[in-house]
Length: 102
Image (tube, rainbow, N blue to C red; front, top):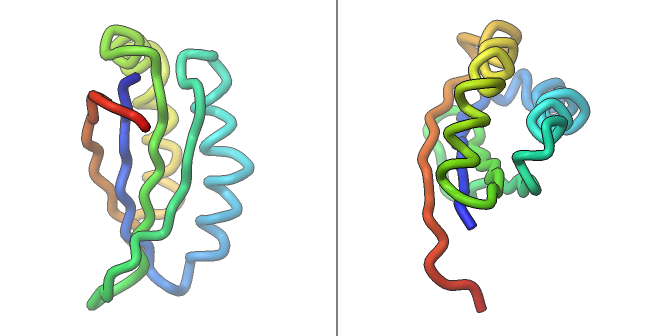
């Protein structure tokens, strides 16, 4: 399994609108192709100087599947999110190769 993790920092003033958009529009768009197998949304439990941090982990079968998704679909979906919430939201992505799951 391969994980595409996106970490977000969201200003308090837009958190409810952001959560609704992510749940009802962003994640369904990410899952639509079938390449992304699942999405797990978590609030990061650290004290922030500004905003609230969230992590969304998108599972794919392998790195090759994720690369296919990134080339075909990812960037327009992320751009829509960025245009809607910037500058009150920032994000970065990391890729994780799951080596063990118990």
